[in-house]
Image 1: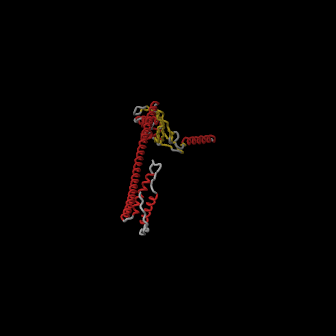
Image 2: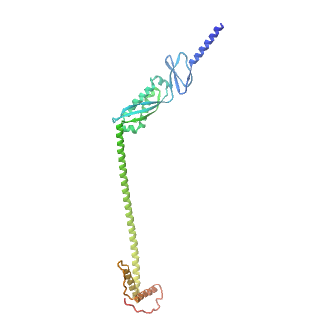
Image 3: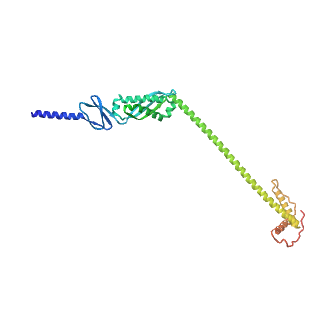
Length: 319
């Protein structure tokens, strides 16, 4: 009896251990397990220790709740302007509802890839080639909105969809290269023409400013010359008036001053002549001295000298 009781206890302990091993489930971080009872989903086990009813419940699907990445295979797409291009991409998605991801769709990854590929053809097929090459961000946004809405019944959240590569045919690439070169040549010609035009405008403005400044300078010089001539004429008129007054008062020296002044000016004109090499002066030196003496007498009288003192009279030389 003792041996039979020992065997029973051992069997009972083994059953309890086996039962506990079947009932306790360890769920790792980043995963969710679905629990099925007689083949029907009843609840979800979250990370940590979980308990199920042995032999009645079982673990159905083990879902990865972390963000996952899928590559979109390359495919050929015909654009709206009948250009054929090869396109591939990448998908970033996350399971937010484990029961839906487990029981609403079969083979989740294949479903997601096919969904994205069909929407790539739809979105990019409605655009021109130039739009495909220049508006890649807009394509990504449109794809994300469409695919995310379509994948919501599967318990998925599309975080990002990126177009990795757009490869046009070789002949189309060469044509685009020629077109780009022509556009650059056109822009270069336009910029060169604009530069020449601007240079011509600046040159004309500079010449205009130079002419204006030169005219201003000539105007100022003419004004100064006229003012100088006016002052010279005033001085000449004043001198002539003084000589005339002196003559009218009977001062013979004034006549000598007038004649000597004109005489000296005539000599200066002869001396300054560019063709004059030798100057012949058939004149009497005493006559010049007498004229200069007359000039000195007038100067003394004009500046308040001894004008009232009688001076010895000189015989006026004949010039």
